[in-house]
Amino acid sequence: MNFVLFYLILFIFIFESLNFFCFLGLLPIPLASLIFARDFGLILSGFYFRYASLPPPRTLSRYFDFKLPTAEVHPSLISKANTALQLVLMGATISGIPFNSFLKKNQNQ
View (spheres, rainbow, N blue to C red):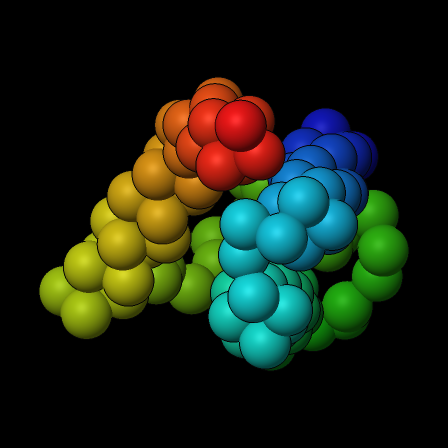
């Protein structure tokens, strides 16, 4: 069950942080939607591959029993690059919050 709880917390964190950045006007809504859809798709595909690779009979208790063998997933180079770019974007957006308020403050003077 810790597996599901971890992904639920991660999903909520991603969704709320993207909403916050869009609310502040630091991140365009289409870009935030694209990032959210990609992460949501990855989470769903992880659940699907776990289910598909589970030997019969497929029960809920066996689904969450991680001692059973399952499919191994290895990320591709482009996936790693995409994740790195997302982290850079989030870091730049977070570090841009103080600079953005400073620039707005100086433009009004």
